[in-house]
Image (cartoon, rainbow, N blue to C red; front, side):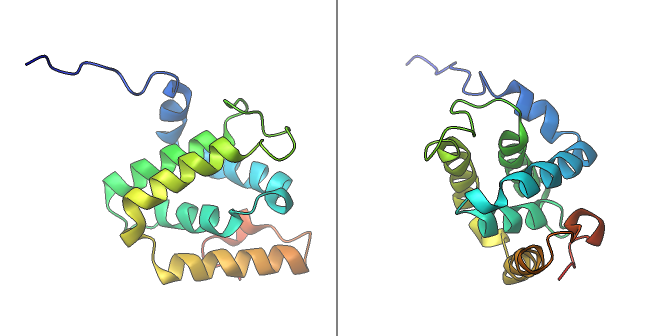
Length: 138
């Protein structure tokens, strides 16, 4: 029986490298998130995944999966460029949805509550800095 030696990570190397640099992911995540929050229908799921990825209680393998998906979201290039109307965030949503499906049991109601609180604050106060406020912002 032949073994499968296919490298499924081809094309994702930049996301893998970025996911290993947690501080860079934090910085770049908030910068991109603020630019696009009004255009993405999966903002709450993305934020909940972000809070789960940086939660010290989250198992390492879950953090790695979510950081990889978040890194793909913040990369400046995509399979489908984010500036394309309608389709621009389709690939980001698919990568995030796959990662969330793999680790859904680790994304807690507290992660979702933090995400909703930040979205409410961003909606109410356009100058609110969620990055500086931290995971308990809201």
